[in-house]
Image 1 (cartoon, rainbow, N blue to C red):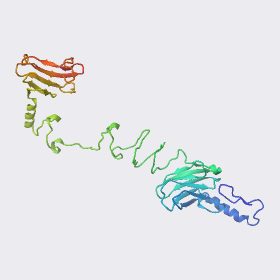
Image 2 (image 1 turned 90 degrees about the horizontal axis):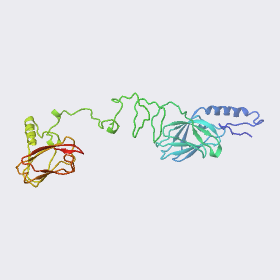
Image 3 (image 1 turned 135 degrees about the horizontal axis):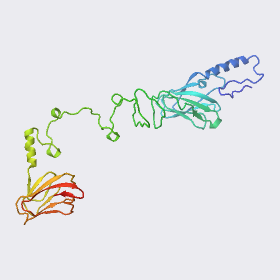
Image 4 (image 1 turned 120 degrees about the horizontal axis):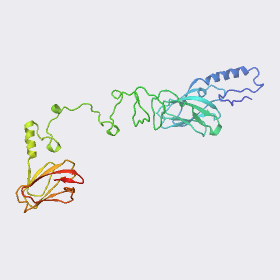
Amino acid sequence: MATYLNNLRLKEITTGDEDGTWGTSTNTNLELVTDGFSYGTKAMAADANETFTMPDATADATRGFYLKITSGVSLTGTREITLGPNTVSKVWMIENSTTGGQSITIKQGSGAGVTIPTTQKTMVVTDGLGAGAAVLNANPSGAVGSVTSVGGTGTVNGISLSGTVTSSGNLTLGGALTGVNLTSQVTGVLPTANGGTGSNITTFVDLATNVTGTLPLANGGTGAGNASGARTSLSAAARPIVKGANYAVLVGENVVATAGGITLTLPSGPSAGDTVGIKDGTGAAATTTFTVGRNGANIASSATDLVFDKNFAEITMTYIDGTIGWSV
């Protein structure tokens, strides 16, 4: 009785059988051997797991070396393709040409399988170990080829890319990136945290022709739109400020006190080099003092307010540091 226990399911004639007809079986076997080096296509009939079994001594696309798997319906998830029988040990190049953009997983038994993303090709080996049979990825670890897309999370080692590289997510490089023209081949914005500017603007604004309005004194401007106005504005800003009640002094101001018993509070959070001016404007400070409040900073290295008691006296205070504070 003939058997079919070989890896291509060829007919093995028992000694003495098929007297006068063995040639037919032998020719069929030779044809099936050539099929083992050929191209074949198998179609999934449904959006479900499916088994493709190599038949005994009969031509079938499953026997081909290159097996293209298609689907008559659009797949909605990853589907398993089981290659049978589970005793066949064989090499296949399998292409996932199914519709629906889903992966397929090639299985043979309860052992490991190989998942092939949509539109991709992978060489696999079935170990043919029966119920526990596994499918192994046979792609050479150092293979050189083309990568059209990479989905999910993973690592690719030793790959050379040419042309346009597009990333819809995070592209992390563990080594040197060479041969890239930053002017013509890179798009997007490099954040300041990564050494960029955080902007893709490469032109500058002409302040003389493209900017209107005035920049206030408080923002470092003159508050005027012409030279004459600037002189007037800056002159006004430099004039002393007369105060007869409590007042919070700003950096750069010169304040003239016209009443006793008031407090002129120094600026909060000063920086080195900040200055203020204080003056007794009535000549009565010796008898009716007023106070310069330190506002948390030292005055001449002392954590006490300054009592102003000199008639018509005028001082300039400059902030030095956290130890000295305001120097008089």
